[in-house]
Length: 222
Image (cartoon, rainbow, N blue to C red; front, side, top):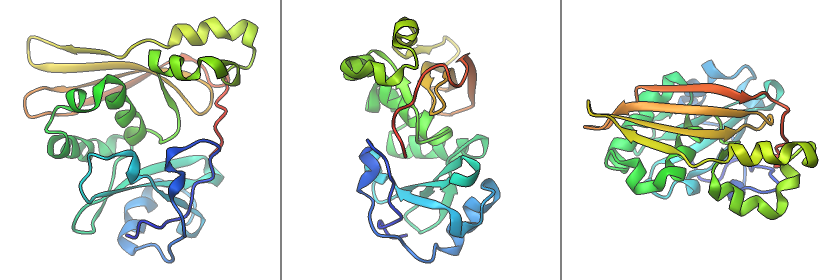
């Protein structure tokens, strides 16, 4: 599919370089997405976000939004022109395959802890959101009030949620990556992803709420 797809409309997004709309969407693309979004294909907003993933080599990633139902999915176009879903349980096998091939089964070494957390968060759940870590805090320190509903009350809670991702390898050959996520709805989640080290697998992604939606602000508008 062409790189020129319907543009994002964010205040702040590296993916905003997408330009002209494509009409019509390929039927194979529609068939890959249709079971997962309630709105008809003509109501979707499609953005090419491939530039966010420089380790890809010709494949393309598209973020597809159903704004009326506040849902979105991520879709990979492979080199043969086929389309596969990355989002949710249905997409875990494809994420695993991409990491095995493009990141040589070692995403932490290739992307770093924050980068690996970002990849899992964006592909498994939603392109929107932020991984909360010391890097996030360092970048947003001067603008931290923009992320708070009540700066006097919430500043310490957001700071406390900005912890480094934890990565462990067990004696039985399993890896565990844990990290915090600020959702687009202003909640905070604790993610735990688990798999096997040898011939990388992604077996489980467990998400537990820490702060409910509406605790903080998510000031970036898409």
